[in-house]
Each structure stands twice: as C-alpha cells, then as structure tokens.
Image 1 (cartoon, helix red, strand yellow):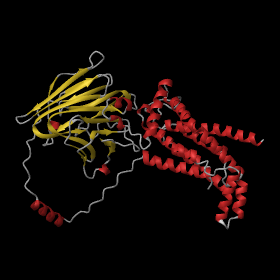
Image 2: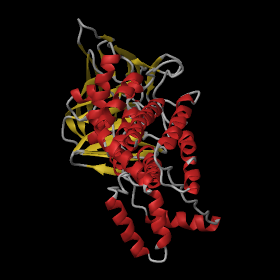
Image 3: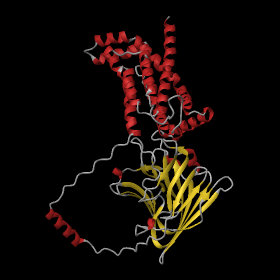
Length: 511
C-alpha cells in the first residue's frame, strides 16, 4: 500500500470512527430479563421480607389541593411564558425568534408530572398545591425593562414565598425562594422541558457542569443516582438546540441526577431559608449565554477539538455578519482554513508526483531483492534519497488537517445559528440533509476527479479499490447536514484547483 492509499484509508477510518465517537451516541443496553419465581417462592419471599422490614416512619401530612389553578403570562421581546399557580412554576414558553417545521414559534412545554423549577418537599406533592399569586401579567419592553411575580403558600407549620424577576431582552430570569418550617426541599428541573428536537446523534437529557467539566447523562448512566455536593455550577436538560437550566446562587446541599418514571431528570436539594437562582429556558446561543457570566455557554459542546472549534465558530459568525448568508460564510471559511495548508499540500503533491516518476525504479528494486527484504528496504531508502523523495510526504498534510476537519464538523453540526439557515435554491436549511442529495452527489464527483488528478503509485488492483471511496463517501454524506457537505465539496474543489496548478508546474519543469 503506497502513501496515497494509506492516507485515504487513514482519513476514511478517522472520519467514520470520529463520526461515531463525536456525533453518534451508543444505544442504551437492554435490561436483563428477570426470571419469574414460582408462586410458592414468591409467597415465602414476601413473608420473609415483611418480617425483616423495620417499622415504617410516619408519613408527613400531604397538603390538600385546594383552589383553582390560575395562570400568569410573562412576555418580553424574546419569549411569551405561562406560569401556573399549581406548583408556582413555569408551564410553557414560546420562543419568538425560532420557528418549528410549520413556521410557527417553538413552544417548549413542561412535563405534567415534573414541571421545571418546581419545589418538592418531603411529602413529594408540594408541586401539586395551588399558590396564591401577587401581581398580574407582566409585559416587558424598552420602557418597562423589569417585572416580578410572587407566589405564596403557607400552612400552620411552614410557608413558601417564590419571587420570579424578569428582564427585557434575555431568556434568563431570577428566582428567590423563601422557605421556613421545613428542613429542606428540592428544586426539580422538568424531565422534558426544553427538549424540543431529539436526535440520535446528539445528547438529549440531563447535563451537569461540575467545576470545569461538562457531564451528560443517559438512562444507561443512571442505574444508580449520581450525587454532587461540591463544585456544582448548574444543572440542565438539553436537546440539540434548546435547553433549560438552574444556576444556584447559594450553597446547595446536593444535586441529584436520577431516573424517575423511566426518564432521566435532575434536581437541587436546598436547605430552608432564602435561596436564589438564575433560571434559563431557551436556545443554545453561545455568545448570549457567555454574557450571562455563569458558565452556561458550556452547554454548547464542541467536543475534543473545542480549542480549534471556538475560534472557527467566532470566525463563521463574523463572516455571516459581512455576507448575511451562512452558506457563503461556510465557503469563505473553508477557503480561509485551507490557506495555511497550501504550502504543505503543494509539497505533498510534488512529493507524490516525484514518487510516481520513480515508480518503475522502485518496481525493479522490489523484484530484484524480493528474497532479501532488508536489502530491498535499504535500496529503496537510497533511491528516495537520490531523487529527494519523501514516501510519507503525502500523508502528513492530510493528518494535520484532521483536527481542523473535526472542529469544523462539530461547529457546523450543532450550532443553532445554522438551524433553518438558507443557502440558495433548494438548500433552505443548512442544519439538515440536502433534500435532493445534490450536494453529496457533487461532492462524490469532485472526490472522483480529485482522485484521478492526484499522482498515484498504486498498482491497477489498488486503483480499482480506491474508485469505491467516492461512492462510499457519497452515501455516507447523504445524511449529513447540508452545511457540512458544502464545506467538504468546496474543500474538494480547492484541492482540484491546487492539484491542477501543481501538475502544470511539474510538467513545465520537465519540458
């Protein structure tokens, strides 16, 4: 196998394995099937268990559910939210700036069993009671930039006051809980709230930021609850483009991520007294999240190559501000990221051309010393030295570009900025696959042309095998977001242009 074949195989394997590692999450393992006991055994087991059980402690009194549920509407320029007296929590939020597939504003709805930001006490039903509401609907704008809603609940033994404070121009809002008469309580983050778009290749579910580590969880990770006591920054529920989060401003007793009713969820355990939080429900817009100054920007996970992805993401947004089209911005970004590699690629292409020229001499050495591998290797090295050929020269530039490729792959694959972003003609959403597969087919054609133009030292059998690579990549890219395919297509076109001029120059030197 020569250098070009090796390089192609390395890149193919890197792309396929990398795609699986960075983008496709493994399916949760199947739970083992439990064998049923015979009736007699069951009866005996139950009796034994009951005999060994300690006396159950007296249950706390369950508050009566009284009164009629009332709703409060809070609206600013970014969202329209509905809060409910039932549990003093958020019921749903309409995201004005982001549309669903039918063109209507996205509405993130709370799970009926575990709404987001709900208080749960020891009896487990505090989320069901009706609070008294102080204040009415809140409408914020340029002249009314802040507003609050207060929820109150009290019994003969304890009371809870919740104050939400909202601001114009942000998805974030503040919460202050004043709790007396109970030892502690939990603030739960609804299981499905903020989960609008589910994807097999992107994480959906609970996320925790502990110190500087972003930890994400699936059902398979939560056979036992995960408990955090130190270093916790926030808890969240996420899908590909949207999320909800709780950022505690006071010391927490613990954070728990566990499975309830077969669905992963997260909660903060707090001591009674006065506790404050920053809450968020909305899109994963990294720059606006960073401006909040609480680390929520880490919800946008650019993966292993984030050190490269972050500046590329910044550059992509700057280019968009200039051209106002993310497709054109991707084309310019592809050109700019290729510029640093031009000298290396030129050198690689020249090396492959020289290697092709000495191929007959290499074949003679292999035939002459086929029974003496050590002598064959020595003669080949002398041949490379005489003709100033580097047999690995074709691989190094490609290997160096792999981190850049994966960084761009992640940026173009998860950035909400590309969601529903049109390019031109039939490509009206760069975040999803090409509906007519035109871009993947063009990408495969350019890959084939590039392959035919590139100097090769392969034998005929190897050359026939390599003809399958464009076909494999074409089918692989059928499911990729259009923005990613556009990047690869432009990169191939640039390679063809560069190879053309290198070949012309080498032919001129021979003449």
